[in-house]
Length: 194
Image 1: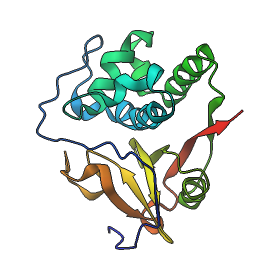
Image 2: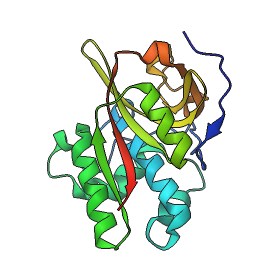
Image 3: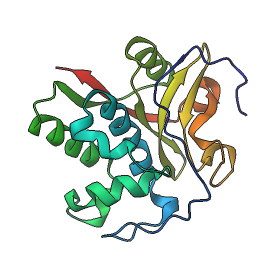
């Protein structure tokens, strides 16, 4: 089920995941740790942005212990209008775009339908994290493409849902084959230059 392919290109930084940190539920809407995949996924984008714009996004990379989705929500949950927004990737994309626009940063996040191969191509070309949605029947999840190989993606999936390991120790570097993802990728969110 897990591809053994070599990863040729990887986005830096890869934000580590500490499954022993004892997540709390989020401050405002009390979202439990197992439901914070949206925060985990978008936080990878904010951490990447913190390298280019430390004065704006630096708080995302200053935690002494990796804080995953909880850190994202502790800083941005006030922007959610209602609890359901926590599970809406397009809402999170709009929040990111508002922050980028507020600070005059010439990137915008855009939503596209995709396949794993598209995500890999974007990572190879731009070396940027790519949040993407997956669906297996009623199960829906969002993870982040962080590296690309010839027939696989290196992803940040702290909960390891596709490989059946909740709170995977190495969940920030799980390798999924294109074959495993085929027909299950629902959308990707790309950070593009204006």
